[in-house]
Image (cartoon, rainbow, N blue to C red):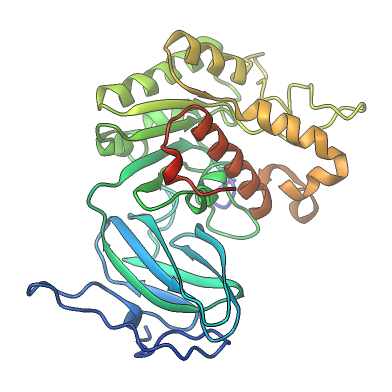
Length: 354
């Protein structure tokens, strides 16, 4: 189930006015006790910003608004949603902050390296960026993602993984480091030094690691699948991290009666291994928090029905009932957000409303 690889500055000296004519004074970077100034608006054009920064975690503070009503969204790196569309009244300035992970490769671990530094996009229905400041994040907690193409930072439209949309729901102090990769199973993820061999050393004490691997374990027997999940959990805990197991999103594969009660939809492989059931069992036996995304997405897809659920997937665009659209990935990321709060895996004050 690898898609792509196989199913991968203009400086300005005034505030950025994106079609609405800002009259605010320029945002100037300032020197502080002899240290270099923080990167700011001089690194932006009308639709994007780029900062020549090394890999790491950064806090971004944006000031939004202009002379007229505006509505601005911020994205970045490989099509990540970093700040949801935010409205500002005419003449109003709205300040928002978020934390972003910068890495190489910037998207999928086995994908293209991308552009060095931090790249941001400025969008929305009436965008207006009046100021921006980027500083190293000193005390950010990481949420690392281990998963497949339904989770990863998909490189091209119309595809999107739920992990690509999750940052939009998080406030400053929580960053998403998405190491999900298209086509990976528990076997391939554990066996590749560029995947688990890279992720595991990055886990710091207190970091949260969400693990969703199932779609590509089509030939993995039950004992091996269980052992692999247990190995991932143990590896996280050995590093002082906090693992959470995530059951896979359903495939949009309806029965005649409008339900998804079949092996294709519910990720039961050709050997009869019920992946969600094994994940639930490992979570219970190893005392690991469980985000039952299979149950949540099944209930949602069935409630929308055969036609209404098409918008969540790429049913119309690609005849693809496994991978999600940007809309679907955003909806599923919101389900993850709810479960992170329900399980108290993140503080409520660090999460935006859905």
